[in-house]
Length: 231
Image (tube, rainbow, N blue to C red; front, side, top):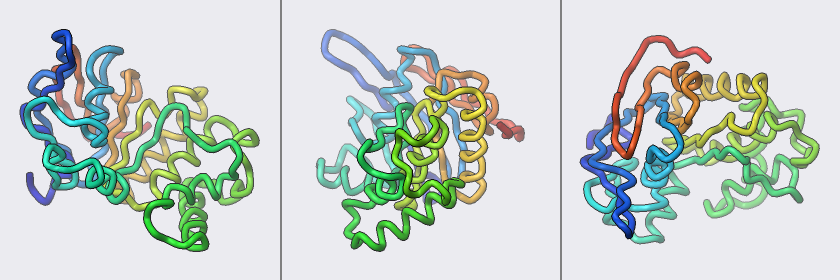
């Protein structure tokens, strides 16, 4: 682990009862400010990998370090604190509260950070403006398009200023036009300094990113970079 990396996996494996080996000796590193696709078909192990990087699970063997912390050495409370301080999550199905407007959905991303309500809402307003939704603060999820819901989810993930943003199939529930807007936003956020991993089965999305880590049958089969990176 160096100060220049956010994610370090060294010979990481994950096995389950019954002889199921979801990950087999995975090694890779992600540096500060990178924009990376983790791409593979269904059943390839990418969801298991997401759970390890997101500190939602621990490896069976090997080492996983996130933001400098070896997750095998941390208690559940310490892992929760690590997620709260360093990680932001964006999911395919948004996970927004139907009874709250966009502002409070985003403010809830700071619920466990100890900020008073006014500061949480102030920060939420800034995050929503950052994703171009400053005019939709009072709208509830049923009043938003799919693309707008995903941008609210991204704002919620960013409101705590995490070192690392993990986006799991961020365009999977969107039409093509909305998906393109979300990917443009992901590029903009990365250009402003956020380290981002996009987990996807979509080769077109993966090929639009500067680095692709391809996984199949629990193993990394390629790790390639390009100067091309436009959505």
